[in-house]
Amino acid sequence: MENDKLSRLLPDDVDRREAEGLDATWRMLDGIDAPTPDSDRMRARLDAVLDAVEHAAPATPPRWFSRSGADGVRFYAMQGLAAAAVLLVGVAIGRYVVPDTTRPADSSSEISAMRSEMRELREMVSLSLMQQQSASDRLKGVTWTGQLDRPSGEVISALLDALMHDPNVNVRLATVDALERFASREDVRRAAIDAVDRQMSPLVQIALIDFLVKTNERQSAPMLRRLAQDRQVNTAVRSRAAWGLQQLG
Amino acid sequence: MKEVIRIASTALLCTFLASAAVAQQAAQPTTDRITVPFSDPERPGTLKVNLLDGTVTIKGSNRRDVLFVADSQGARQVLRRRQQTEPPPGMRRLTQPGGFGVEERDNEMSVSSGFNRDEINLEIEVPMRTKLRVSTVDGGITVDSVDSEIEINTVDGEITLTNVGGSVVAHAVDGNIAATVARVASQAPMAFTSLNGNIDVTLPAAVKANLRLRSDQGDVFTDFDVQVTASASANRTQQRNGRALRIDVNRSIYGTVNGGGPDFELRTFDGNIYVRKGK
Image (cartoon, rainbow over all chains, first blue to last red; front, side):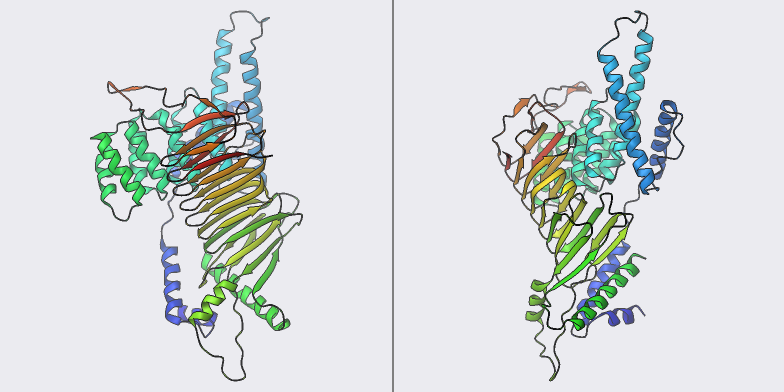
Protein backbone atom coordinates (compact mmCIF):
# COMPACT_ATOMS: atom_id res chain seq x y z
CA MET A 1 0.00 0.00 0.00
CA GLU A 2 2.77 2.37 1.00
CA ASN A 3 4.82 1.20 -1.92
CA ASP A 4 1.94 1.74 -4.30
CA LYS A 5 1.57 5.27 -3.08
CA LEU A 6 5.26 5.74 -3.57
CA SER A 7 5.32 4.33 -7.05
CA ARG A 8 2.39 6.46 -8.16
CA LEU A 9 4.32 9.55 -7.14
CA LEU A 10 7.48 8.43 -8.84
CA PRO A 11 8.27 9.14 -12.46
CA ASP A 12 9.27 6.02 -14.33
CA ASP A 13 12.91 6.82 -14.95
CA VAL A 14 13.80 6.99 -11.29
CA ASP A 15 15.83 4.24 -9.72
CA ARG A 16 13.19 2.58 -7.52
CA ARG A 17 15.60 1.13 -5.02
CA GLU A 18 17.18 4.48 -4.38
CA ALA A 19 13.78 6.09 -4.03
CA GLU A 20 12.69 3.45 -1.55
CA GLY A 21 15.90 3.90 0.35
CA LEU A 22 15.27 7.61 0.61
CA ASP A 23 11.72 6.98 1.64
CA ALA A 24 12.88 4.60 4.35
CA THR A 25 15.32 7.25 5.56
CA TRP A 26 12.44 9.72 5.75
CA ARG A 27 10.42 7.28 7.77
CA MET A 28 13.36 6.70 10.10
CA LEU A 29 13.71 10.44 10.52
CA ASP A 30 10.04 10.60 11.50
CA GLY A 31 10.69 7.90 14.06
CA ILE A 32 13.33 9.90 15.89
CA ASP A 33 11.98 11.16 19.17
CA ALA A 34 11.98 14.91 19.44
CA PRO A 35 13.27 15.96 22.86
CA THR A 36 10.19 16.46 24.95
CA PRO A 37 10.24 19.52 27.16
CA ASP A 38 10.13 18.85 30.86
CA SER A 39 6.49 19.80 31.27
CA ASP A 40 6.52 19.60 35.07
CA ARG A 41 9.28 22.08 35.30
CA MET A 42 7.68 24.27 32.65
CA ARG A 43 4.44 24.11 34.60
CA ALA A 44 6.25 25.08 37.80
CA ARG A 45 7.88 27.99 36.07
CA LEU A 46 4.63 29.06 34.48
CA ASP A 47 2.93 29.00 37.85
CA ALA A 48 5.70 31.08 39.37
CA VAL A 49 5.39 33.64 36.60
CA LEU A 50 1.62 33.67 36.92
CA ASP A 51 1.99 34.30 40.64
CA ALA A 52 4.29 37.20 39.98
CA VAL A 53 1.84 38.61 37.47
CA GLU A 54 -1.07 38.31 39.85
CA HIS A 55 0.85 40.24 42.46
CA ALA A 56 2.10 42.91 40.12
CA ALA A 57 -0.99 43.45 37.99
CA PRO A 58 -4.21 41.90 39.32
CA ALA A 59 -6.20 43.20 36.36
CA THR A 60 -4.43 40.87 33.93
CA PRO A 61 -6.70 38.11 32.70
CA PRO A 62 -5.49 34.65 33.65
CA ARG A 63 -3.95 32.13 31.28
CA TRP A 64 -2.28 34.81 29.20
CA PHE A 65 0.98 32.96 29.32
CA SER A 66 -0.16 29.62 27.94
CA ARG A 67 2.52 28.48 25.60
CA SER A 68 0.20 26.35 23.53
CA GLY A 69 -1.72 29.45 22.56
CA ALA A 70 0.72 30.57 19.92
CA ASP A 71 -2.12 32.48 18.30
CA GLY A 72 -1.48 36.06 17.42
CA VAL A 73 -3.60 37.80 20.06
CA ARG A 74 -2.02 36.12 23.00
CA PHE A 75 1.42 36.54 21.52
CA TYR A 76 0.89 40.25 21.11
CA ALA A 77 -0.66 40.50 24.56
CA MET A 78 2.44 38.88 25.94
CA GLN A 79 4.68 41.28 24.06
CA GLY A 80 2.64 44.21 25.29
CA LEU A 81 2.87 42.94 28.82
CA ALA A 82 6.63 42.52 28.51
CA ALA A 83 6.85 46.10 27.26
CA ALA A 84 4.70 47.32 30.17
CA ALA A 85 6.91 45.42 32.58
CA VAL A 86 10.02 47.02 31.08
CA LEU A 87 8.37 50.41 31.52
CA LEU A 88 7.62 49.62 35.15
CA VAL A 89 11.21 48.53 35.68
CA GLY A 90 12.34 51.80 34.14
CA VAL A 91 10.10 53.81 36.44
CA ALA A 92 11.29 51.77 39.40
CA ILE A 93 14.93 52.37 38.46
CA GLY A 94 14.26 56.07 38.04
CA ARG A 95 12.69 56.35 41.46
CA TYR A 96 15.41 54.29 43.00
CA VAL A 97 18.31 56.13 41.41
CA VAL A 98 16.94 59.62 42.11
CA PRO A 99 15.63 59.38 45.64
CA ASP A 100 12.86 61.75 46.56
CA THR A 101 14.44 64.18 49.02
CA THR A 102 11.11 65.41 50.33
CA ARG A 103 10.27 61.94 51.57
CA PRO A 104 10.74 61.28 55.30
CA ALA A 105 13.81 59.27 56.20
CA ASP A 106 11.88 56.34 57.63
CA SER A 107 10.85 55.04 54.23
CA SER A 108 13.63 52.49 54.05
CA SER A 109 11.21 49.59 54.33
CA GLU A 110 9.25 51.05 51.46
CA ILE A 111 12.42 51.25 49.43
CA SER A 112 13.36 47.68 50.17
CA ALA A 113 9.86 46.54 49.28
CA MET A 114 10.16 48.42 46.03
CA ARG A 115 13.54 46.92 45.43
CA SER A 116 12.25 43.40 45.81
CA GLU A 117 9.31 44.22 43.58
CA MET A 118 11.70 45.52 40.98
CA ARG A 119 13.74 42.37 41.24
CA GLU A 120 10.65 40.25 40.70
CA LEU A 121 9.68 42.30 37.69
CA ARG A 122 13.10 42.06 36.13
CA GLU A 123 13.09 38.35 36.70
CA MET A 124 9.65 38.03 35.18
CA VAL A 125 10.72 39.93 32.10
CA SER A 126 13.80 37.75 31.66
CA LEU A 127 11.74 34.59 32.05
CA SER A 128 9.09 35.68 29.60
CA LEU A 129 11.67 36.81 27.05
CA MET A 130 13.26 33.38 27.22
CA GLN A 131 9.95 31.87 26.08
CA GLN A 132 9.62 34.02 22.95
CA GLN A 133 9.68 32.69 19.41
CA SER A 134 12.40 35.03 18.24
CA ALA A 135 15.96 33.92 18.94
CA SER A 136 17.00 37.54 19.42
CA ASP A 137 14.42 37.93 22.22
CA ARG A 138 15.54 34.72 23.86
CA LEU A 139 19.16 35.91 23.70
CA LYS A 140 18.04 39.11 25.37
CA GLY A 141 16.30 37.13 28.11
CA VAL A 142 19.41 35.04 28.72
CA THR A 143 21.75 38.05 28.92
CA TRP A 144 19.32 39.93 31.17
CA THR A 145 19.63 37.23 33.79
CA GLY A 146 23.19 38.51 34.23
CA GLN A 147 21.77 41.74 35.65
CA LEU A 148 19.57 40.10 38.28
CA ASP A 149 21.29 40.48 41.63
CA ARG A 150 19.76 37.50 43.44
CA PRO A 151 18.07 35.34 40.83
CA SER A 152 15.66 32.68 42.06
CA GLY A 153 15.79 29.01 41.30
CA GLU A 154 13.27 29.65 38.54
CA VAL A 155 15.82 31.64 36.59
CA ILE A 156 18.44 28.95 36.97
CA SER A 157 16.07 26.19 35.90
CA ALA A 158 14.98 28.30 32.91
CA LEU A 159 18.62 28.69 31.91
CA LEU A 160 19.26 24.95 32.29
CA ASP A 161 16.14 24.29 30.24
CA ALA A 162 17.41 26.58 27.49
CA LEU A 163 20.82 24.89 27.58
CA MET A 164 19.18 21.51 26.96
CA HIS A 165 16.29 22.38 24.69
CA ASP A 166 16.67 25.73 22.95
CA PRO A 167 16.65 25.13 19.19
CA ASN A 168 19.14 27.91 18.49
CA VAL A 169 22.89 27.30 18.87
CA ASN A 170 23.63 30.92 19.74
CA VAL A 171 21.05 30.97 22.52
CA ARG A 172 22.51 27.79 24.00
CA LEU A 173 26.00 29.29 23.74
CA ALA A 174 24.90 32.44 25.58
CA THR A 175 23.28 30.23 28.21
CA VAL A 176 26.64 28.60 28.99
CA ASP A 177 28.07 32.07 29.67
CA ALA A 178 25.07 33.06 31.77
CA LEU A 179 25.32 29.90 33.87
CA GLU A 180 28.93 30.67 34.77
CA ARG A 181 27.90 32.79 37.74
CA PHE A 182 25.99 29.83 39.16
CA ALA A 183 28.95 27.48 38.80
CA SER A 184 29.14 27.02 42.55
CA ARG A 185 25.86 25.10 42.43
CA GLU A 186 26.16 21.35 42.23
CA ASP A 187 23.05 20.95 40.02
CA VAL A 188 24.36 23.45 37.47
CA ARG A 189 27.67 21.65 37.14
CA ARG A 190 25.95 18.29 36.85
CA ALA A 191 23.64 19.64 34.14
CA ALA A 192 26.67 20.97 32.28
CA ILE A 193 28.22 17.50 32.27
CA ASP A 194 24.98 15.99 30.97
CA ALA A 195 24.63 18.70 28.35
CA VAL A 196 28.01 17.97 26.74
CA ASP A 197 26.77 14.54 25.70
CA ARG A 198 23.40 15.75 24.49
CA GLN A 199 24.67 18.72 22.50
CA MET A 200 24.54 18.59 18.75
CA SER A 201 26.68 21.67 18.33
CA PRO A 202 30.46 21.31 18.63
CA LEU A 203 30.85 24.99 19.51
CA VAL A 204 28.53 24.61 22.52
CA GLN A 205 30.29 21.39 23.51
CA ILE A 206 33.60 23.23 23.54
CA ALA A 207 32.11 26.07 25.60
CA LEU A 208 30.78 23.52 28.09
CA ILE A 209 34.15 21.78 28.35
CA ASP A 210 35.75 25.18 29.04
CA PHE A 211 33.08 25.82 31.66
CA LEU A 212 33.80 22.52 33.41
CA VAL A 213 37.56 23.10 33.32
CA LYS A 214 37.08 26.61 34.63
CA THR A 215 35.05 25.38 37.57
CA ASN A 216 37.55 22.58 38.15
CA GLU A 217 34.80 19.99 38.00
CA ARG A 218 36.64 16.70 38.47
CA GLN A 219 33.48 14.67 38.12
CA SER A 220 33.51 15.50 34.42
CA ALA A 221 36.70 13.50 33.89
CA PRO A 222 35.05 10.18 32.87
CA MET A 223 32.84 12.02 30.36
CA LEU A 224 35.81 13.94 28.95
CA ARG A 225 37.81 10.74 28.64
CA ARG A 226 35.00 9.05 26.75
CA LEU A 227 34.57 12.09 24.49
CA ALA A 228 38.30 12.28 23.75
CA GLN A 229 38.29 8.67 22.55
CA ASP A 230 35.04 8.73 20.57
CA ARG A 231 35.88 8.77 16.89
CA GLN A 232 32.41 9.96 15.96
CA VAL A 233 32.87 13.18 17.84
CA ASN A 234 34.10 16.32 16.09
CA THR A 235 37.92 16.49 16.16
CA ALA A 236 38.01 19.97 17.69
CA VAL A 237 35.76 18.76 20.49
CA ARG A 238 37.88 15.64 21.03
CA SER A 239 41.09 17.61 21.34
CA ARG A 240 39.40 20.10 23.65
CA ALA A 241 38.21 17.22 25.83
CA ALA A 242 41.75 15.81 25.94
CA TRP A 243 43.07 19.24 26.88
CA GLY A 244 40.39 19.50 29.58
CA LEU A 245 41.42 16.16 31.06
CA GLN A 246 44.98 17.36 31.22
CA GLN A 247 43.92 20.56 32.99
CA LEU A 248 41.81 18.71 35.53
CA GLY A 249 44.31 15.90 36.11
CA MET B 1 -0.01 13.92 9.25
CA LYS B 2 3.21 15.69 8.41
CA GLU B 3 3.91 13.08 5.82
CA VAL B 4 0.49 13.43 4.28
CA ILE B 5 1.02 17.16 3.94
CA ARG B 6 4.44 16.60 2.47
CA ILE B 7 3.20 14.14 -0.10
CA ALA B 8 0.15 16.24 -0.83
CA SER B 9 2.17 19.37 -1.39
CA THR B 10 4.66 17.57 -3.60
CA ALA B 11 1.84 16.03 -5.57
CA LEU B 12 0.11 19.38 -5.83
CA LEU B 13 3.26 20.99 -7.04
CA CYS B 14 3.79 18.20 -9.54
CA THR B 15 0.30 18.74 -10.88
CA PHE B 16 0.75 22.47 -10.97
CA LEU B 17 4.05 22.31 -12.76
CA ALA B 18 2.93 19.58 -15.09
CA SER B 19 -0.04 21.66 -16.17
CA ALA B 20 2.20 24.69 -16.49
CA ALA B 21 4.59 22.69 -18.61
CA VAL B 22 1.81 21.45 -20.85
CA ALA B 23 0.38 24.96 -21.12
CA GLN B 24 3.64 26.52 -22.25
CA GLN B 25 5.73 23.90 -23.91
CA ALA B 26 8.05 26.39 -25.49
CA ALA B 27 8.90 28.12 -22.21
CA GLN B 28 12.22 27.69 -20.45
CA PRO B 29 11.70 24.62 -18.35
CA THR B 30 14.59 25.11 -15.92
CA THR B 31 12.90 27.27 -13.31
CA ASP B 32 9.71 26.73 -11.35
CA ARG B 33 7.94 29.80 -9.97
CA ILE B 34 5.13 30.07 -7.47
CA THR B 35 3.85 32.94 -5.36
CA VAL B 36 2.26 32.39 -1.97
CA PRO B 37 0.41 35.15 -0.06
CA PHE B 38 0.55 35.74 3.68
CA SER B 39 -2.78 35.40 5.46
CA ASP B 40 -2.37 38.89 6.96
CA PRO B 41 -0.09 40.96 4.70
CA GLU B 42 -0.58 44.01 6.95
CA ARG B 43 1.71 42.68 9.63
CA PRO B 44 5.18 41.19 9.14
CA GLY B 45 5.04 37.50 8.41
CA THR B 46 7.55 34.82 9.21
CA LEU B 47 9.32 32.70 6.61
CA LYS B 48 10.83 29.41 7.73
CA VAL B 49 13.03 27.54 5.28
CA ASN B 50 14.46 24.11 5.95
CA LEU B 51 16.59 22.52 3.27
CA LEU B 52 18.85 19.54 3.37
CA ASP B 53 20.82 20.14 0.26
CA GLY B 54 20.75 23.32 -1.78
CA THR B 55 21.23 27.05 -1.63
CA VAL B 56 18.76 29.63 -0.43
CA THR B 57 18.81 33.22 -1.69
CA ILE B 58 16.38 35.62 -0.08
CA LYS B 59 15.79 39.16 -1.25
CA GLY B 60 13.59 41.77 0.35
CA SER B 61 11.47 43.93 -1.92
CA ASN B 62 8.31 46.01 -1.93
CA ARG B 63 6.01 43.09 -2.60
CA ARG B 64 3.31 41.80 -0.25
CA ASP B 65 3.42 38.11 -1.07
CA VAL B 66 6.31 35.69 -1.40
CA LEU B 67 7.77 34.56 -4.71
CA PHE B 68 9.59 31.25 -4.87
CA VAL B 69 11.78 30.41 -7.82
CA ALA B 70 13.13 26.90 -7.60
CA ASP B 71 16.07 26.44 -9.89
CA SER B 72 16.85 22.82 -10.09
CA GLN B 73 18.85 23.15 -13.29
CA GLY B 74 22.04 21.97 -11.67
CA ALA B 75 20.16 19.12 -10.17
CA ARG B 76 18.77 18.13 -13.54
CA GLN B 77 22.20 18.19 -15.12
CA VAL B 78 23.38 15.78 -12.49
CA LEU B 79 20.32 13.66 -13.16
CA ARG B 80 20.97 13.69 -16.89
CA ARG B 81 24.55 12.67 -16.44
CA ARG B 82 23.47 9.76 -14.33
CA GLN B 83 20.57 8.51 -16.42
CA GLN B 84 21.47 8.01 -20.01
CA THR B 85 18.11 6.61 -21.02
CA GLU B 86 17.31 7.83 -24.53
CA PRO B 87 13.72 8.86 -25.05
CA PRO B 88 11.78 6.24 -27.04
CA PRO B 89 11.09 7.25 -30.67
CA GLY B 90 8.53 9.99 -30.93
CA MET B 91 8.72 10.87 -27.23
CA ARG B 92 10.50 13.56 -25.25
CA ARG B 93 11.58 13.85 -21.68
CA LEU B 94 9.47 16.05 -19.43
CA THR B 95 11.21 18.10 -16.79
CA GLN B 96 10.51 17.12 -13.24
CA PRO B 97 9.87 19.54 -10.43
CA GLY B 98 12.50 20.02 -7.77
CA GLY B 99 10.00 19.06 -5.14
CA PHE B 100 9.50 21.40 -2.26
CA GLY B 101 6.50 22.13 -0.10
CA VAL B 102 5.16 25.46 1.11
CA GLU B 103 2.73 25.76 3.98
CA GLU B 104 1.16 28.95 5.31
CA ARG B 105 -0.54 29.24 8.66
CA ASP B 106 -1.12 32.29 10.88
CA ASN B 107 1.20 34.44 8.81
CA GLU B 108 3.94 31.88 9.10
CA MET B 109 5.21 30.29 5.92
CA SER B 110 7.19 27.07 6.05
CA VAL B 111 9.22 25.73 3.17
CA SER B 112 10.87 22.38 3.21
CA SER B 113 12.54 20.17 0.69
CA GLY B 114 10.70 16.98 1.20
CA PHE B 115 11.28 13.84 -0.69
CA ASN B 116 13.63 15.10 -3.36
CA ARG B 117 16.46 13.37 -5.02
CA ASP B 118 18.85 16.19 -5.61
CA GLU B 119 19.73 19.58 -4.40
CA ILE B 120 17.33 22.40 -4.97
CA ASN B 121 18.29 26.03 -5.28
CA LEU B 122 15.62 28.37 -4.00
CA GLU B 123 15.41 32.04 -4.81
CA ILE B 124 12.85 33.75 -2.66
CA GLU B 125 11.55 37.30 -2.77
CA VAL B 126 9.86 38.47 0.41
CA PRO B 127 8.35 41.68 1.80
CA MET B 128 11.20 43.59 3.44
CA ARG B 129 9.91 43.20 7.00
CA THR B 130 9.52 39.44 6.85
CA LYS B 131 11.06 37.60 9.79
CA LEU B 132 13.39 34.89 8.59
CA ARG B 133 14.27 31.55 10.08
CA VAL B 134 16.42 29.69 7.58
CA SER B 135 18.42 26.54 8.01
CA THR B 136 20.25 24.27 5.60
CA VAL B 137 22.54 21.34 6.09
CA ASP B 138 24.60 21.53 2.96
CA GLY B 139 24.10 24.76 1.09
CA GLY B 140 24.83 28.45 1.29
CA ILE B 141 22.36 31.03 2.51
CA THR B 142 22.26 34.56 1.11
CA VAL B 143 20.01 37.32 2.39
CA ASP B 144 19.79 40.79 0.88
CA SER B 145 17.79 43.87 1.92
CA VAL B 146 15.65 42.32 4.64
CA ASP B 147 14.85 44.42 7.70
CA SER B 148 13.61 42.28 10.58
CA GLU B 149 14.62 39.42 12.83
CA ILE B 150 16.97 37.19 10.90
CA GLU B 151 17.86 33.76 12.20
CA ILE B 152 20.17 31.62 10.08
CA ASN B 153 21.74 28.22 10.64
CA THR B 154 23.82 26.04 8.39
CA VAL B 155 26.16 23.13 8.83
CA ASP B 156 28.35 23.10 5.72
CA GLY B 157 27.22 26.22 3.90
CA GLU B 158 28.33 29.83 3.93
CA ILE B 159 26.20 32.68 5.19
CA THR B 160 26.19 35.98 3.27
CA LEU B 161 24.07 38.87 4.45
CA THR B 162 24.07 42.19 2.61
CA ASN B 163 22.23 45.39 3.42
CA VAL B 164 20.22 43.79 6.21
CA GLY B 165 18.67 45.50 9.21
CA GLY B 166 17.09 44.59 12.51
CA SER B 167 18.74 41.80 14.42
CA VAL B 168 20.81 38.86 13.23
CA VAL B 169 21.42 35.54 14.94
CA ALA B 170 23.59 33.41 12.67
CA HIS B 171 25.52 30.17 13.08
CA ALA B 172 27.56 28.22 10.55
CA VAL B 173 29.39 25.11 11.70
CA ASP B 174 31.93 24.87 8.90
CA GLY B 175 31.28 27.85 6.65
CA ASN B 176 32.23 31.51 6.72
CA ILE B 177 29.83 34.21 7.79
CA ALA B 178 29.95 37.57 5.99
CA ALA B 179 27.39 40.14 7.07
CA THR B 180 26.83 43.79 6.29
CA VAL B 181 24.34 45.14 8.77
CA ALA B 182 23.11 48.51 7.56
CA ARG B 183 20.53 49.27 10.26
CA VAL B 184 20.46 48.01 13.81
CA ALA B 185 17.31 47.47 15.87
CA SER B 186 17.74 49.23 19.19
CA GLN B 187 18.35 47.01 22.20
CA ALA B 188 18.37 43.84 20.12
CA PRO B 189 21.27 41.51 20.82
CA MET B 190 22.99 39.77 17.91
CA ALA B 191 25.19 36.73 17.54
CA PHE B 192 27.44 35.47 14.76
CA THR B 193 29.16 32.19 15.55
CA SER B 194 31.02 29.48 13.72
CA LEU B 195 33.22 26.52 14.50
CA ASN B 196 35.60 26.54 11.55
CA GLY B 197 34.67 29.61 9.54
CA ASN B 198 35.72 33.25 9.45
CA ILE B 199 33.30 35.81 10.77
CA ASP B 200 33.33 39.09 8.89
CA VAL B 201 30.77 41.59 10.11
CA THR B 202 30.31 45.19 9.01
CA LEU B 203 28.29 47.34 11.40
CA PRO B 204 27.05 50.93 11.07
CA ALA B 205 29.78 53.34 12.24
CA ALA B 206 27.44 54.83 14.87
CA VAL B 207 26.37 51.49 16.33
CA LYS B 208 26.12 51.32 20.12
CA ALA B 209 26.99 47.86 21.33
CA ASN B 210 28.82 45.71 23.81
CA LEU B 211 31.04 43.42 21.79
CA ARG B 212 32.06 39.97 22.95
CA LEU B 213 34.74 38.77 20.59
CA ARG B 214 36.46 35.45 20.70
CA SER B 215 38.50 33.30 18.39
CA ASP B 216 40.18 30.31 20.00
CA GLN B 217 42.69 29.61 17.26
CA GLY B 218 42.50 32.70 15.08
CA ASP B 219 42.76 36.47 15.34
CA VAL B 220 40.38 39.32 15.95
CA PHE B 221 40.59 42.45 13.78
CA THR B 222 38.61 45.68 13.91
CA ASP B 223 38.75 49.30 12.79
CA PHE B 224 36.19 50.34 15.42
CA ASP B 225 37.35 52.24 18.47
CA VAL B 226 36.63 49.43 20.92
CA GLN B 227 36.90 50.37 24.60
CA VAL B 228 38.03 47.11 26.11
CA THR B 229 36.35 46.55 29.45
CA ALA B 230 37.64 44.10 31.98
CA SER B 231 36.61 40.59 31.13
CA ALA B 232 33.58 39.93 33.29
CA SER B 233 34.57 36.51 34.44
CA ALA B 234 38.34 36.95 34.53
CA ASN B 235 38.12 39.35 37.44
CA ARG B 236 36.04 37.06 39.53
CA THR B 237 37.75 34.68 41.90
CA GLN B 238 35.13 32.71 43.71
CA GLN B 239 36.04 30.22 46.35
CA ARG B 240 34.67 26.77 46.08
CA ASN B 241 35.59 23.96 48.44
CA GLY B 242 38.40 26.15 49.62
CA ARG B 243 39.91 26.29 46.12
CA ALA B 244 39.93 29.26 43.83
CA LEU B 245 38.11 28.85 40.53
CA ARG B 246 40.33 28.51 37.51
CA ILE B 247 40.13 31.62 35.45
CA ASP B 248 42.73 31.17 32.76
CA VAL B 249 40.56 29.73 29.99
CA ASN B 250 38.45 32.66 28.97
CA ARG B 251 39.93 34.35 25.94
CA SER B 252 36.96 36.56 25.15
CA ILE B 253 37.47 40.25 24.52
CA TYR B 254 34.74 42.35 26.08
CA GLY B 255 34.49 45.88 24.74
CA THR B 256 32.06 48.69 24.13
CA VAL B 257 31.56 50.67 20.95
CA ASN B 258 30.14 54.20 21.01
CA GLY B 259 29.30 53.96 24.70
CA GLY B 260 27.88 50.47 24.70
CA GLY B 261 24.48 48.90 24.04
CA PRO B 262 23.08 45.42 23.53
CA ASP B 263 25.44 42.44 23.44
CA PHE B 264 26.85 41.41 20.06
CA GLU B 265 28.61 38.10 20.26
CA LEU B 266 31.12 37.12 17.57
CA ARG B 267 32.73 33.79 18.21
CA THR B 268 34.63 31.27 16.14
CA PHE B 269 36.84 28.40 17.15
CA ASP B 270 39.13 28.03 14.18
CA GLY B 271 38.64 31.16 12.08
CA ASN B 272 39.38 34.86 12.20
CA ILE B 273 37.01 37.61 13.27
CA TYR B 274 36.71 40.92 11.40
CA VAL B 275 34.54 43.72 12.76
CA ARG B 276 34.38 46.48 10.16
CA LYS B 277 33.09 49.99 10.38
CA GLY B 278 30.45 50.60 7.74
CA LYS B 279 28.98 53.84 6.48
